[in-house]
Image 1 (cartoon, helix red, strand yellow):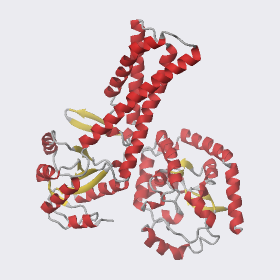
Image 2 (cartoon, rainbow, N blue to C red):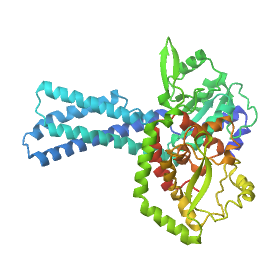
Image 3 (cartoon, rainbow, N blue to C red):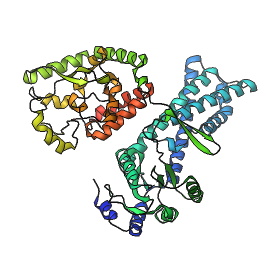
Image 4 (spheres, helix red, strand yellow):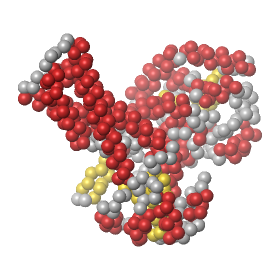
Length: 501
């Protein structure tokens, strides 16, 4: 939904739009300012962490092995050198790269590699120089220290992303490329608020708004005037989409001229929906050749994933047995109807299976579904999946069960039977599959899941197109690590109850 400011900008001339965008960007953060602040906070937090780790190692050594009178003297000589060397290692291994702070495991991996390198170098120097340093102290220090360094970045990431989600520390983005490509990127950025980006204008190949932007993004001019527009508006980020018409030579010259400007440059390649571990860039003679691994749908069928599913589902069923019994009694007592809702769903390779849930609706819910479908489309705008925000068929216990996804627990039995997996695409109804296009059928190449990217990215608030996009991303980019990450994010999504209805 566009704001009044966006609608006003959309009907302005490019010159008027540039002046308006300049005023909007005047209060936004620059890329360089955000980098400096983030790095300064990480360095100060790391210094404090190393002090705490050293104090803890000293206290544990003295408490467990008896007091060593000369330990304090030897530490006073070596502590500063050890800490300084560790910080230098973190710098060399890109442990302070603020661009990696908002998302992904790379920053944490860099810190761990730096810590291992620091431990190895310090150990070698201590041995070769004959420095008397307690082995117990050394061991505890290099165990506690990395944990505190990782905790620093985790907490800073959560704080940064939370603040950005609340509208703080955001950067204004001017996108370069065809307006359709710009709008596609803008929709993703608007949904992922933790990125901290706001697309405030577009620079198109012709400089003309070929039909008004559906998102109210004003056109600031043509690509031939990019440098002049960037100088006028001073965006925090210039984002080049796949629809940008500049040649490699023109892009290189543009980068030269932006070298001294306080602006970050992001390039969105034509390759999308591909995880980083499937892509390798190997520059050859100045050409950035991108090597891409093929999709991994078959990887999601490996015995390792199935073994994890069986073990985890069996353990959860045993641990949650009292909860399952309590929910069953509550559902039964509420209206005397059946406890379990059984429904035909479409699983891997289009095979139908009996899908189990705790009943959260009235007993004749299916009978009144048809007459409610039109109303649901008006309520949600999704003609493929039936989801209604205020569905009158839901019972009183059902509202609580749906809010925290407790109605899904019987699906652990589906996992044991092999119908489903813990993580996978959303299990589809036969009538939904009847409306699939070629791309959507790709979702059926793996087992459906109790949770998935759709669950941790918005649940029922997602449009049908977004649901398919997330499921296809999961199928094509499956990895064991991604499954673990989704399971951990599911807990947070369930507790927040956003999009659950």
